[in-house]
Image (cartoon, rainbow, N blue to C red; front, side, top):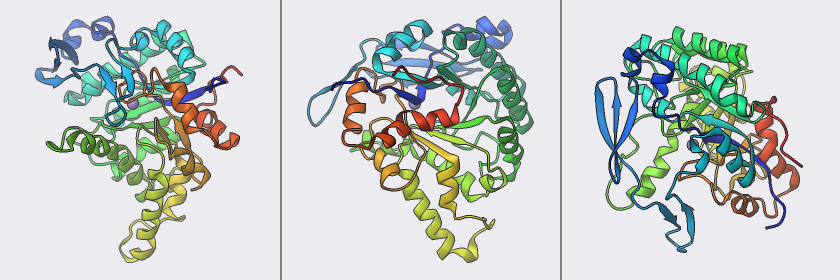
Length: 372
Ligand code: MN
């Protein structure tokens, strides 16, 4: 390992302060918002608007590669900058990450809120907090994702426009169908896609935001669930392609975070095959082959996938993007440089530059260039 490889990250996360809602909302509303508390060594209690459930936390905080015994991550503490933006920038500099999309953490539980007014006001308050308290630390590097109220289409459009107005560039949507609403291929969402295109707001689908992540148990469960959990993000993009959303909104850009990269050529092949061989069943007809929409409008971030550069270099998919998944266990914190050097060993410089920088800068041109 010699030179530092700088990369942007299309997949990072920020941990909000425990008392965030009380900082930014009236107490009567804040009390109903998601909060987590540690109830034992390996369990936390999640409470949201009168509902609660417990959640297992990793007991062993050192991750070792099961095959080689190599230590992958030391998680005895969360990375220092997980919830402190000044320390975060020190972590990023150390790891070689420059710009990054930051998804919320506590916002993940907001999909459990069933009160339309409450979630709309919470999203507005969190997005304003992101802009006033987090973004000023490095407005040319940090790209916080807007929390979105998804119980009503008009509320979603209003918050998307508000988020854009106050200086956010990406709106985070759940990868699966929002509770009580139609799925992403349904026409009820068409006004939201049109609004995102009009506002030049990227739509972010982060994997694992569609509900229960432990579907399989017993032998092989950890591996099976892990692979299964990335499908919801991939399917969200597929639903938009298949239902003609990108034909009606050619300027709409969608980022699928943490689902890898080579799934895009694979899914494009299958969509094209279906479109050709099942043409008599296909509705709506599309002006271009489905794969062309995937390749032009969908962007994909990966962390460790050693085949990711081939998605671009060998399979012609240009929108491959690195993602560190900071500060999560699935991410590259502590070994980002090692991972980048391994992945890009022997890869052409133009492919490396596109994956580490160019793809991200195409989505977020306001982000500055890393040190050279
Ligand atoms: Mn992530």
